[in-house]
Structure formats: structure tokens, C-alpha cells
Image (cartoon, rainbow, N blue to C red; front, side, top):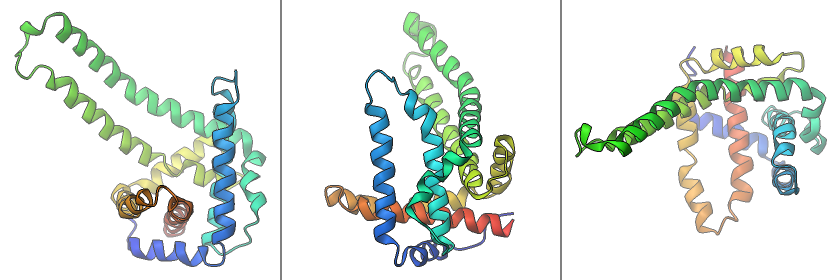
Length: 229
């Protein structure tokens, strides 16, 4: 079922939930960012800490913002709630990564082979436009990648919202919820482009308020979809 709730209503719901919670939400987001960046900077780990702990942290962040937009109790400790669902969080995240990789692999192979052929024998193909073919394929690949990311975008929200859900169930539910709702999610994302440009003009300071607001709006989008479906 297509989401018929206007985007302005979702952002209004996000602002209503954030009312009285701006300071706490900024604090939660800063702790999340510090932990995420810190994990990537630990020497000799080669990104393994992020691979292991990123998904539970994201789930905890979603738990907090879902509680915020639903106007429920939202203590700072909810940021670590995802570690109580560590196995499901990690498995769901890895399954999504593997699914997306499997879809992208044929594009990568085709682009690589075409580039090799053009490099070794450009004269065998229409020389004027030959190198446009890999570029077109890359654009198609990125467009398809965005659609795939949207298809599975709600997986960790579902894990955050339902402690009993299993990884594969969360993936199936995300696919069901996103059916006919790619456009509304895209509209929600584009709604913040102007705010992002303004935040850049403030030398990035505006992102301190904008990122929690965007997180709350996306949580409101999921909450609206899950209730209507």
C-alpha cells in the first residue's frame, strides 16, 4: 500500500516529537558519531570494529528516535539497546550487504570486461561513443544501487521496533513496507537538501540540529508506514 501521508505531516510529527528533546537528541547523535568515528580510528583493527558493532549502534539509534517521535520515554541508554539484539542486528545488516553485493556483482563484471575490451581494442567499436558505454552502465548501476538501498532501508528500523523479529523476517518486512513507497522516501530525502546546503554555509555547525531532525523524520516515515500497513 502506498503511503498517502504528506511529507510535511511526517516532518511536522518529527518536530513535535523533538519538542523538549532537542538537547538530548543532539547528545545521543554526538555519542553515536564519536563511537562510530572512534571505532574506525582504532589502529590494527582494519575496520573490523565497525563491521561488528555498527549495526547494533544503528539499531539503538533507531530505538531512540522511534521512541522520540512516538512521544514515549527515550533515555540516552536506548542508544545501546541494539546490543540486546546483537545477533539479529548483525545478521540482518550482513544479509542486506550480501544481497546488495550479489545484485551489483554482474554490473561490476560487465563494466570491467567492457573497459578491458575498449582499452585493448578501441578501434573495434565505434570510437567516438565507445567510452560512453561504461559511463552509462555506471550511471545505471548507481541508480539501481539507490533503489536497492531504499528497498532494504527499513530493515534495522524493524529490528529496532520488534525485539522478536528474525533477520530474514526483517528483510521481508522491509520489502513489503517499501512496495510503492520509493517515491515518498525519495521526497522525504530531497526535502532536506535545502537545509543541508544551509548547514554547509554555517561551516557544518547547522548539522548539529539537522542530523537529529532528519533521523526523527525518517523514524516518523517508518512509524507511519508500519501503522498503516
